[in-house]
Length: 171
Image (cartoon, rainbow, N blue to C red; front, side, top):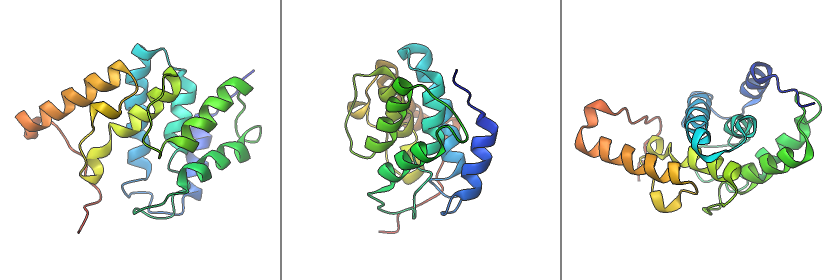
C-alpha cells in the first residue's frame, strides 16, 4: 500500500529548504509545477502521485538561485531519505520519481509519460526566470500545446497572462 501524506511532506520539505522559500525555486514554483503537472497528467496518463511528489522534491535541495548543477541528484537523494519514513511508494513508482528528480536538469525529453509530465511541468514555469517555455523541450503532446499556448497568450495580450517573475537576471 502506498501512503502519501502530502500535507505533512510539504510542511517538512518547506521547513528544511535552505534557500529562500519565497524565491524563484521555492514554494510558489513547486505549487505551479504541481498544478501544471496535474493538468498535463489528465492527458498523458502519468501517475499523478509521482507528479505531485516530483513537484515538491525536484528543487527542494537547491542551495542557490543561480547555477546549482547537483540539485537534481540531491533532490533524488531526499526522495530516498524520506521513503518509508514520511511516505511509501512501490519500487516502480519510486524509480520513476527518483529518475525524474535526478535527471530533470539535463535538458532531455522522455517517452515515459510520468517522467515526461514531470519535466514538462517544471519547464512550463520557466517564465519565472525570464525564459520562454520551448515546446521543442517538452516530452508530452499536452506539454507542447501548453507551451505554445502560454507563449502566444503572453505575446498577444500580456495583461491577461500572469508571468510569474520572482528572480530577474542582472546580467
